[in-house]
Image: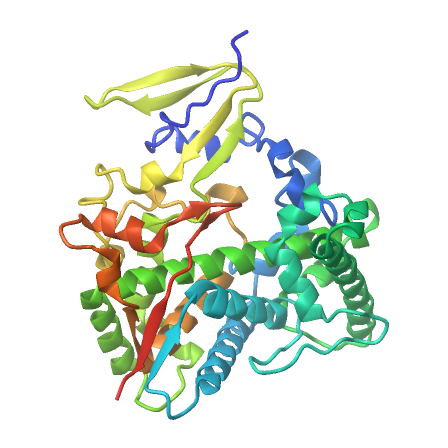
Length: 448
């Protein structure tokens, strides 16, 4: 038997991807790579087989538009939109009415991560937090929910690799472990509180309540345990918080680099959202270029650059050679196969002039199978629509009021560089758990 091999250089064409994303029993997820996500309990992302099916049966209707009534779908998406607009409005108010120019030294840390955290807190957990509000510590707790949530979302790797006793020697390790315990306690309390409320017939539109209702509707072993619920809540938090925040950070940086695209967005937004008014959810379908900008950002910089699979048996996969012929590659059992999302998204066969930042390519027909920022098939990202609505709301709100520019663009020395080189120099994307922007200083200038 051959040793394990990576076919990441091969899996960048569309021929193999349908088999990899639909034949789950033959190409399961290598769950050992996702152990970090089991910190709070079993969940839909870090599972396979029957356990995954059990979790998906309950979790999928929470997000799936197809499984929701028109009214429920509208309520869920509108909640995400309204909370996002409220939070971004709070942020702008904190800048002050007289400030015509705002310097943000770290766009991700100071804007997109806090916004994403507050949206998740409100729309997913039903806990509203305002931008200026000081974190309130609940009874029987020593750390606030907001601080616990932010600390764990930002320090998950540190929590995983450090034993608790190390906290005797490191204040930060001690605090991270304390936040981990506090967050688990908050989530357990939320489960009990929401169970009591639902038993009284009270209705909630947040995702946490939908997940709990889905579980309560099942019987016996098909229900999710409290540990399962907490595990899923946490991965929904992580997936919805960091990935959306990083995408928005990259999008704002790209728009600062591409002034022509930014102005086209402003023209569309101002034609839909009257001056001095707040964007409403009902306007989202009249803003296709904003959605296209999010997609183009994800095409150029997919937050998850690769999707791993493992061959459950000796198999073959089709691939297209440069001359257009199809050949099947032998894949021995145990082989780790990476679907190279970055290569797929820049394959000129599907994306003409692939290094160009051009959101308009998503306004006409494109090869949908060649666009996989949310994965694909039944293992695709359940929170995709949540993230899309939030991202469109953030860009619409900011760009309707402000122009976005790089701080001191001359310091980047961009003259003579290709657009790909400019992106690399300004955004400096790096991989931690996902692809992350660097510290990105931006200037927001109020539009008159």
